[in-house]
Length: 295
Figure: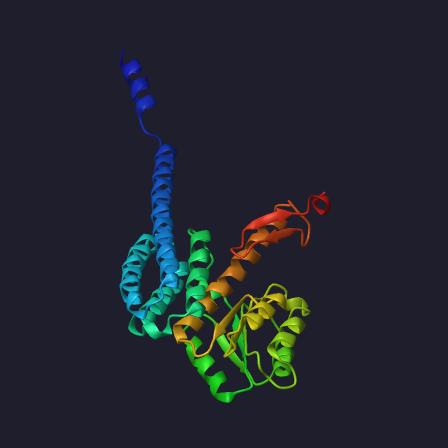
């Protein structure tokens, strides 16, 4: 009888491996709740941002922007415990841009609103990502105007990206041949070689394949915007812009490139596809695979 009780005790005793499994399951559930909460907060922010873009009167901006600041606090609280090293700087930059717009509603225009939308799209797609900001590289700033170059460089100080100013497109091309970069900022109106010609030549450099190029210009017409997309640019920021808008664009597109590169490398390592077979969308998700080349 004693042996029976002993056997029963052994059967009901929780094994160490079971405790570990239970802890992992609990953590997974908690992470799932955090991710769900963060996604909900991001969706609320996206809704508010779209509403802001539809406003026609400046006096309507302030209540929406204040509400967005409150929604940012909820988002930051949801993300804090999950992956602070990777997301907090990006989220902080997003909150700073919203705060700047709240202080100066006259700065609300399509450019910062697109910047906010890009950041929210990336955050929604990368909740739980382990991509760290210390992986980012230098960010070339190309502008023939010394004052503008200096302003761009000052805007990016204090971020993970190290700005490198170039006074011409040709100077920038020489530098780009020497290493890898995460994001490139360039003016459009420059002598000898304009920003669009520069963009085309950058895409021919093997080490710059997939590097996001952001145009910073005073041109706001639809033809310029369409041409910026046609030549391969990922965004067009209009001057004058706030430092927070520059920082948020740098972090968003720099991290997007890192996430996309990491996912492509994972796909290749797993033997699912061969080189250049995976096609990624703007959020870094694999959206299609060339099955014939994969075989």
